[in-house]
Length: 212
Image (cartoon, rainbow, N blue to C red; front, side, top):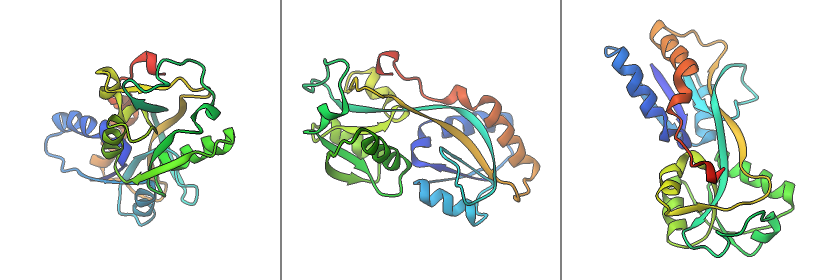
């Protein structure tokens, strides 16, 4: 079977696939990782049996199966001057430099919606196509970032990153398994789809409660 996943999902999808493979060791699975637009294109072109993503593509008739909540937060380096403040407003971040994902990323789109709703016009620093690069840049003190809490769970736990206490955060979206309605799934793909719908939530990274 062929599975697609947006890049942010790589922090839990491989663990779900590994658990499924232990139950069904003879099933071959191909996993493709890309940003939201790349996965949407692959789904439109019938390249995938199904995809793990956030907001399903509106231009394709799909069936969706909920996996679980997907919180987004703003993170800064340990010791950042706003780290100990509580009840920050978006305007308090107006002098900060934001490190962002590339255009086409679902996280980038969600960040821009947050800025528009709060009338925040931030300073945008570097654009990066990798959550890993953004994390390292924030840890290095190059700026702050709006990012999926699932991508920074370990860094929050060990204290290398801190979540800023900003009004309106976390922004919570959902993880879905998405397949085209007109895509006929073979039994192995259907079994994996059912597994993700029933068991997928337990593979989501744990996020420290103080960060949410």
